[in-house]
Length: 337
Ligand SMILES: Cc1cc2nc3c(=O)[nH]c(=O)nc-3n(C[C@H](O)[C@H](O)[C@H](O)COP(=O)(O)OP(=O)(O)OC[C@H]3O[C@@H](n4cnc5c(N)ncnc54)[C@H](O)[C@@H]3O)c2cc1C
Image (cartoon, rainbow, N blue to C red; front, side):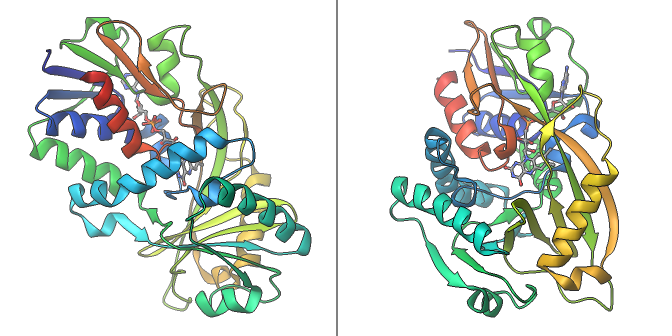
């Protein structure tokens, strides 16, 4: 069996797979074009499973729940407690209509995952759990065990763990993956994977705007929970960081791979919704408004497969690539074996 692996792409998927391969004895090199076009760099970092469940996405929910079960060991392998920024989530609804939508979503999740820890709660029960929430909520659910990571620290921790185990990360844009050395080549280049892996791997981009807010000396502390809200039919989420929150995210078809500037309306909607959910955010500093492009497959499921005897691909993780990273790494290890 081959023992040298080249990986194209140093986002969460490429690095998670490279680390798993290195741990299994492969000599691994990651070739990465840098963070500019990296979805992992802009993402929110939610480890979504229960809160992501949508009727019709049965298989995705199964994969997400398998990945959620792998996260504790994955974090343990990285050994940096700062990566994990929240352990639980609140799914909250601003109005009765939003609550009815949430009830349908939760009914679907419970049907497939009967052991899921989702506790239906009134608005005041949610505010007792998370005092930073605004008044007048219709209610929602407490989702225990569904947390978040700091995606930028995660990338640093993955690269550090890889290097400490003898793997390498090199700055390089790969034009032709067949020319890379190694017994196996894994294409994990996010949106760039389609151009490298060929017509059999159709990946399209969905743009998302996202904000980073930092607390000041005068502001209330960041929330302890990931807060996933619905307000006037629009989703908004707040993801805790040590020094603030990440507020996300819009979702619409990207106009091309360079469509990476946030639109004013996206930023305005996110800010309005976030401050309505957590009024104390109004005194936070807005330190970043960014847009990224999610690498999406046609059926919403990750594409993790062999292309030929030497090449494999892992991409198309859409809105859940961080959450699905440990599952993807374990699936790639099965394919490498
Ligand atoms: C606004 C937003 C919010 C999100 N929030 C979440 C969230 O809360 N939770 C979650 O699970 N997911 C979230 N996602 C989705 C998640 O970010 C992606 O699914 C995931 O990051 C994809 O990882 P990846 O490694 O496949 O791709 P990327 O992170 O895009 O990494 C691909 C890497 O490949 C490199 N590359 C590309 N082409 C080449 C080439 N030819 N040669 C060399 N290198 C190349 C790039 O430079 C890049 O570093 C979000 C996405 C967006 C846009």
